[in-house]
Length: 350
Image 1 (cartoon, rainbow, N blue to C red):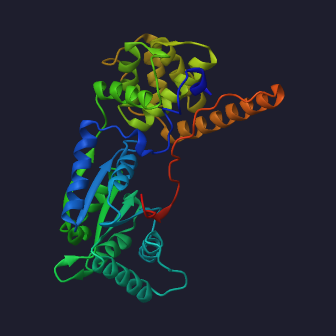
Image 2: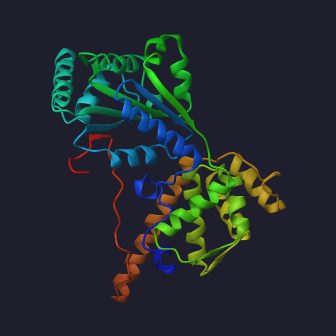
Image 3: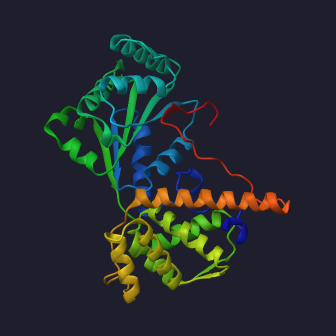
C-alpha cells in the first residue's frame, strides 16, 4: 500500500529473506568471507551463528546465488528438531534423491553413490543446514558421519552449519569433540552499529527506487538503532510499520515523534510488559540512545505475526476498493519472490 503512495518500485522492508536486499555490514562481510573461504577449501564444516533476525539466511542465500552450478551442487536444509534418521531423509530430499520407505543402510548407500557421482563429474557437493541449533545430538553425529565419505583424500560432502547462538553451546559439549575437529572456520554475526543501521535502511529504500519521499529525519535513525539493537529483521519490522503509518496519515516527512508513536502502538498490541514497553516508556520521556531508551530487541515472532495480519487486511481492503470503483490501482512491478521451502536443491541454471 505505502509503496504506491511513496512511488516505490517494491516493498523495501519485507520480512522474508531476499538476496536482492543483502546489505554487507562489517559483520556480514566477515561472515561472508568465511563462507567463501569454506567453498574454496571444499571440505570440513563452517559454522556461522547469530541472533534471530541477524541476516544469516539472507547472507547464505546470497552466497548460493553466486555459486557456479557447473562446479558446485548445493542444497539447503532448514532443520526442525531433526533426529538422525530424519536428517538422512532430509539430506536425501534436499539433493533430490528418492528416500521414502528406504532403510537407513539404503539411504546411506544412495547418498554416498550420489556424492561420488557428483565428484566424478568434476563438481563438489555442499550442504547448508539452517537453524542447525535444532538438530539433536544424534543428528549432529550423523552429519559428521556423512563427512567421512571420501574418494582418495578428498571429502565428498562439505557442510555449513548456520544457527542461533545456542549452536555454539551445543558444539562445546564434550560429545561434539569429533565434529569440532572438523570445523575449519567459525564466526558469530553480531548486530549492526548506528551508522550501519542508517546505511541499511537507505540501502533497502534505494533498492526500490526511493527518491527522498518520504523524507526521514536524522533522529529516526539513532532511535531506530536503540530500539532494534541493530538487528536487520527487527529494523524491517519497525520500518514497515512506520512507513505504513506515514502513508495512512499522508505524511511525507517521518520524524522521531512518528517512530515513538509506532513503538507505542506495537507495544500496546503485542505486550504491556517487556523490552518494548521499556522502549515506549523511554520514548515518552524523550530518552536518547544512551539513556533509558536503550533496549534489547523485542518480541520478534509476535511482531512478525501481527504485521502479516495487518498487511493482509490492508491488501484485502485495497482490492475491495478497486472492485467498488472499477479502477485498477497502479501496482509496482513484481520482483523476485523469496524461496519458501523447508529443504531443496538449487535448480540448475541459477
